[in-house]
Length: 220
Image (tube, rainbow, N blue to C red):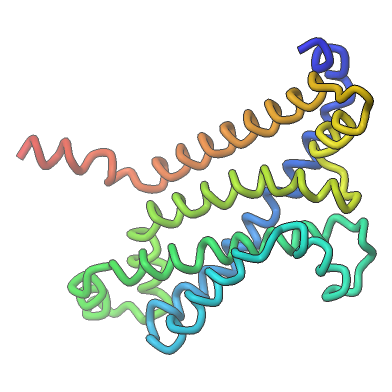
């Protein structure tokens, strides 16, 4: 990895830009998906519309969506917001079904007990249903985050700077600079693994009962 060692100084800003482009849509997409998944878990009509629509949305090729975004948003083609909005849509597409299934799987006895204790629908959602849905939600967010780490690189094809720059520059030299291409791939994969690991740790922190439950059951 000679190329990587010789160019470490200039990689920091590109790595930070890549992370910013990839992770902001994960946060935004999660916030958008929550009320949509909640609605889909409550009303069959909403589920019949939102779940298939989100699945269909994810089938749109990323490059095509990146190109369409400036026309939809009225932005310049090189603005990072185009990539971030597109990736937000992909995140929503991934999470709506996960959140819907997770909330639908909450036992009716649990929601009935919460209602009997005085919880209103919104309070019950945040205090009871959402915590129980956290494992599935985190799993969906992990998939979205790792997916976005790779998709951001494709945005380089429309001029939005990311680690995809290493892949593009390496492929355009004659002969191709395979050291640079491999360096770009390795960095993207490592970043994806780090983000995935951090999200897995977050999921464990948010669901302590999932760690102690089996042991407690065995002890009894």
